Image (cartoon, rainbow, N blue to C red; front, side, top):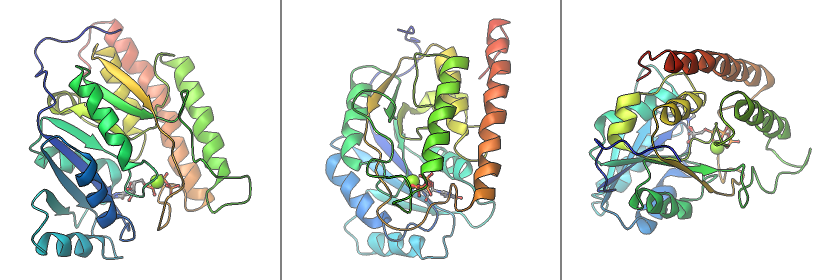
Length: 266
Ligand SMILES: Nc1nc2c(ncn2[C@@H]2O[C@H](COP(=O)(O)OP(=O)(O)OP(=O)(O)O)[C@@H](O)[C@H]2O)c(=O)[nH]1
Ligand SMILES: [Mg+2]
């Protein structure tokens, strides 16, 4: 187990849940309420919406306006759309001691968030929801050719994660998870690099190389409840996104080398 740096706060404290959204009007309000119900720590939920044309921001605004959700905040970004940038904006404005973020389509069950926070309570610095360990599963219910979900994305994601385990460390499995609880000073120290989901590979490699205590918790990823995928709406987008993951895989070898040479990586 990696050593525990002594300079970081040890209590979970207040939790900030960051929900990055683009066209999630069919999911977001129900997700916010589900999270508020299951999280027993003091918390705030911050929706960071990229000015979705489907009215996601307006739906959250109405919920806040109704007056019984003082735990809910909305940040609408009007320029420079992007998943990683939205998560980072949430981190910038979060007031919690522990930060959680996740997809907003119910593919990451809100009922699993307390298990991640429990690990932070136990003293871990980072807890990650993992599809690739005993008890976890990727897009459960998806059958080859029998679903709107693309099985090719699932196969490619599995192959990428195997390649990452082999080339980085076998001690971590779900390098593209995006379902995480992390102590706020740590993520602010490390930062997020990349455009889309590849930021998560970079973050976890630095977490591991810097010796923070991390753990994976299995979760069953299910197909989204409403709305459409942003990751791979078509084959061209899949190739464009996929190539960034591969470039990051190579770049992380350089980060590893830097660490070996004693060069600062965060
Ligand atoms: N703010 C913001 N959020 C985004 C952007 N693109 C995707 N998201 C959110 O990122 C999360 C992941 O996107 P998804 O479309 O679910 O990606 P996926 O899980 O690979 O695809 P599915 O198979 O449809 O679940 C969701 O909460 C999206 O709303 C973006 O450009 N800006
Ligand atoms: Mg999703």
